[in-house]
Length: 196
Ligand code: AP5
Ligand code: MG
Image (tube, rainbow, N blue to C red; front, side, top):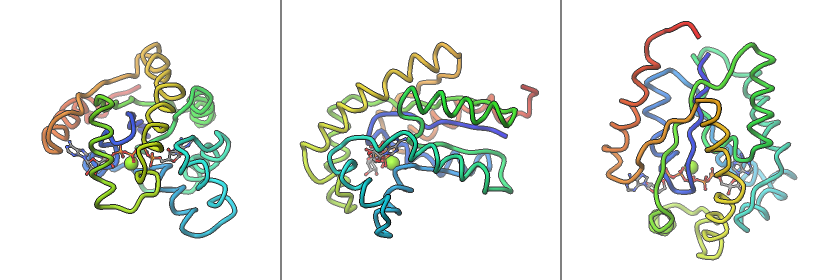
């Protein structure tokens, strides 16, 4: 099984690029943000708790998302791997993921990191706010908090995966098609079935 991580700041294009990657490698795309938004829409207790944190631009507790990911690893079949979008997002989550995979005799295949500058994050999210109804896109304050949370809690994962030789950075600036070309060509080495 392949376990790709789609990494990057808010609005970098993770969700936009996910379908092409998932199709190319027969992966299940898992966005923890989407899973949490589904919880909010369903009105579950978890959703009510998550909404407050998400609307403030903070992260939900590690255990919540770790549980969601583990449940999917156990339940989903008929694919060649997973494309994790928005998980892991803290060093603790990355360590838990490594443990979960080690128990299965697996490991992270590669991290695909889409990088764009903070100003473009703001521009893209402000634009998305006019199209989609995400409450965490609605105010500049929340967007700023999401950017700050990314730098403080999530960016340390760049070093974490570089140290493990799993980190691949892709320039996320350009048209959607240009970025997709870059991502798919960077992933070309993984299309051959090579022994780990
Ligand atoms: P999540 O849903 O993961 O949000 P995010 O990381 O902030 O990322 P986005 O979904 O905003 O951006 P994206 O990179 O997918 O960009 P997109 O493709 O949409 O998480 C939401 C919240 O849930 C978190 O803040 C947190 O509270 C919680 N959460 C989630 N996971 C968690 C975890 N593991 N631990 C704890 N809490 C967690 O693109 C953005 C816009 O730009 C779109 O309009 C798109 O059309 C456009 N666009 C994309 N590419 C281009 C391009 N090349 N050119 C022009 N426009 C483009
Ligand atoms: Mg997304």
